[in-house]
Image (cartoon, rainbow, N blue to C red; front, side, top):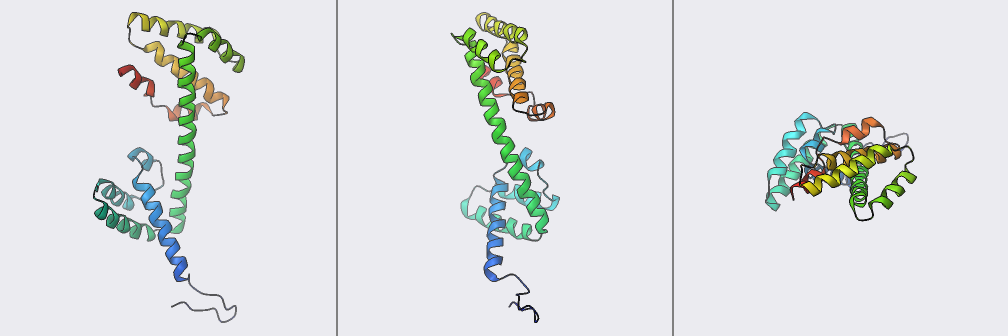
Length: 198
């Protein structure tokens, strides 16, 4: 039962409904965490003692058992300082925004590359160079020619991938992203490599 401050009349402890809201917020955070990949979890400031509980929850397919494990995870999370949980939320928010920006960038690059390699490739190149006047036009034209040549001769897609990298770098710089950010999001494996295998 909550007490009151004799001088101010304010409650000394959170109300039952406030505690319930906090518990539900923590449970929702736990549900969001178990949906993340191991790489995404590694980028968040999650205390070491919580990671095994998150992994255990991820491994449980059964709905009922998973729900119980989530409640168990949330119980352990509530033992953490509020600052720790806030830091995790902040990290997830930033990671989510960054992931969305990265996905949008990769999609724009793929569309642009397809346009350059399509029937109207010359017009697409002219449009690209008008929009990005600082681009290395000679190198982009050469990569486009090499990619088309690779396709005709059924060669491995080296130029195809390099064209993707160059376009990505160009668009990332124009979006105001630093070179470090552009490199950090790219691990040498892009969706184009998957396309090559199809």
